[in-house]
Length: 162
Length: 104
Image 1 (cartoon, rainbow over the protein chains, first blue to last red):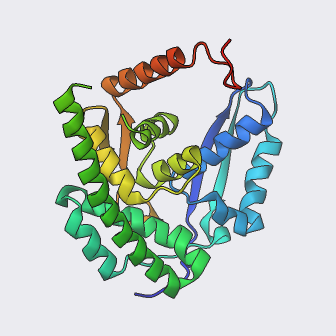
Image 2: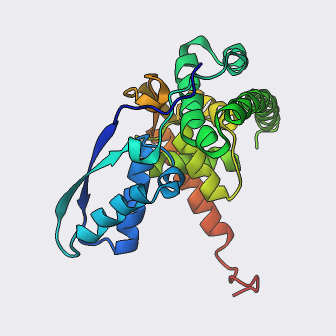
């Protein structure tokens, strides 16, 4: 398990159409939502590096109010800093014990994304891995707790016809 | 529907079919103003899927996930119905009450 920063440039193109009815603020929120939903990582990470934010701001500044235009900008992961660290085995074990087999791969992927985009950039590789294990165990405990509670409430609700 | 289930449904609508566990957890945390663990999101989406309120499909893999796909969620008609019912009930509940809690 190496914790080196990825050397390859992962440039992702995001195309947005600026609706004329949107204000600058609303459009900015749309850009941020899109970046998040495309899995390009937390904006907080982009905020750690001025170049990421500068690119977003430039894209917004270049767009015109009242026009319906298409924006295309590249999000350069090497400017933000990406890692390619796999989820630790202890975390994988915790996840695989409580997640159905059909959903295990995506679940490990979710934790890997958090590990590489939030926990390692924030805490460093070693502590990031510990945080990942902690979150995996805590999340699995949450699944059990939530499942038991929700099942109980469902049964009561059905029994009394509420 | 509980508060978390409701928030997850709203987050899924907001993310317009591109919502997956991490983005749904972020959006739900922002709306509820408290941190929500991924485990809570897995439990909730499982239950909502069993109830037929949402459906899921596998999305494209991305580099920061080590090439693993995302499970993308979208809302279905029963989920939309349940949410609008809750909205109408809330509206009726607060109909005669002013924001300061005095009767209108």
